[in-house]
Image 1 (cartoon, rainbow, N blue to C red):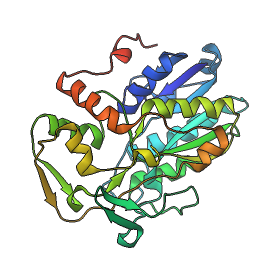
Image 2 (image 1 turned 90 degrees about the horizontal axis):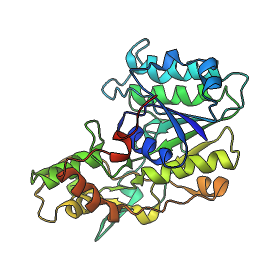
Image 3 (image 1 turned 30 degrees about the vertical axis):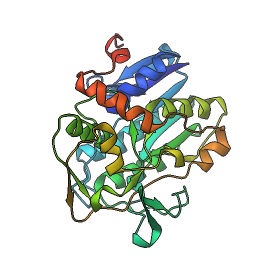
Image 4 (image 1 turned 180 degrees about the vertical axis):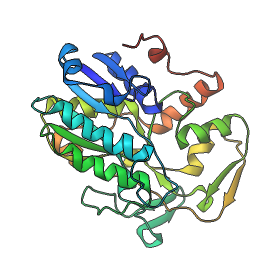
Length: 301
């Protein structure tokens, strides 16, 4: 496929670019290129077979929607622009979204305390109601609905996605591993017993390939690491450095994890990469100061 990857220089964008580059032709498009300069002529010239939109600005501080701010312009306005340039085509479009459109889900009664940490009594499915706690989540809801204007679109929501490499804009996965390998204290709420379901970037890329292959349309799909990748944050950082110093803080959540049943039913997809196997790899790459070599060797178009 010829894939237009919008947001290819971000943390997940770099990892996804590297995955796709091993199998497809990838056209990277980021802030420097400007999403609003994309046109039907560019899609036609590059013979684009798939558009993946990772472009995002994440204002989590404001609890209200702020019209005209960067989070609105890129997340909402960018989606509207993609509808415009895709109109009349049958090019599949995957709009990336987030668990933050749903807000907090788990309370104390929704988890069970086990020796390995909190364990969810259920996993979050696509039928969970919208309850965004911030501007970012609200803007991503709007983008989800806007994408429905293109009949060949799908939304994939993520909880936590990670790569094997360092990145200056990396998420909590990179942040915690970096502190652990540098022998810095790691502060965790809930004692670090809250759970996550990290999804490796290669598993996300494979899901996208299957969505196109199976001709899935107009679906909202949850993509988490699956039950085998449920891990509490305390265990996570200790696998990066068994001697890490953990400082406990008050507050925090009990965890979050997606139900992948719909993705499996629609495409046959299940995550293959195990986070417990990849934490040592990420830790070693961070120690070595490595960015993704597959990405850095690619000349961008």
